[in-house]
Length: 393
Image (tube, rainbow, N blue to C red; front, side, top):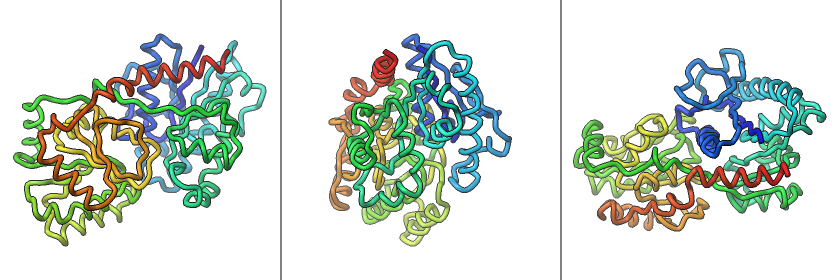
């Protein structure tokens, strides 16, 4: 069985920024290799790819589309189309020369849409097409997303209707796909994302205190939030809820990290902190590299908070738990974990949980046992392989 993991073209693999889908492709491939499967990544060409030992075939695109881009503007959309067309051309060559059926595992609507539209059926029939729905948009009531789906996700609808296997990350996505778009339930599998428990793990007290000192946070209690800086991730909402608590507790710092998607939104956080005299307690850590650096920040934190308005899964949640950091989650987030986090239902409950967590010994409230047992990438990859092999047989 030959598996092709399809990079989205958003940022090169291995991911040098917190791009969740690219991390999924990277980690799945690593786990497939450990299982001695024949796997290869197809990914956008880049002169700045991090060092790696992964089997990667690069898809060449004009240089203007290879630079870093998190703005999600018109250039980003053009990049998606150009990369997807070049990718489809490469896949056509692969299928044309293939003597056996292969697994094509797509993770992005643009990539699969243009493959389906431009590669002749006689070649597509030589592949089993798997598609993972990573899009957060599906994770809420139909009435709230209907217009957005029709305007911006019509490509994804086409993809799930034509894929041989559709992998989803939550139950509500299954409901939408089957009830609204007639996707056969037998072609849908609910899966999870995993976490690299070696990269995200507890550090010693010495390492943590040393890192805090290097960042000028001695004797501070850190509340940490990770995610692209934008309204959906709700960093502003976190600061608004924490405002009275930060005023009363000058030894507490709210630190957030992630690529800035919306500059005006970032400025609104700065303005709120300045107007309320807590600018020294609200710190932006920038865009952190996944792995060692991010793990140091998780460990430095007394707790991690995730107040996102909408998520499909929330990879950063299990990263924080795996790092041994207690997590506080909005009740709007769907998660199957039973340990390692607390859920708040109101601003008052959020503050109460933060206060309780910050004033309890970290080791007494953290619990990574379930992550270790159920969310390893080896386990996630084994589940994928099971479904891939069933399709081939």
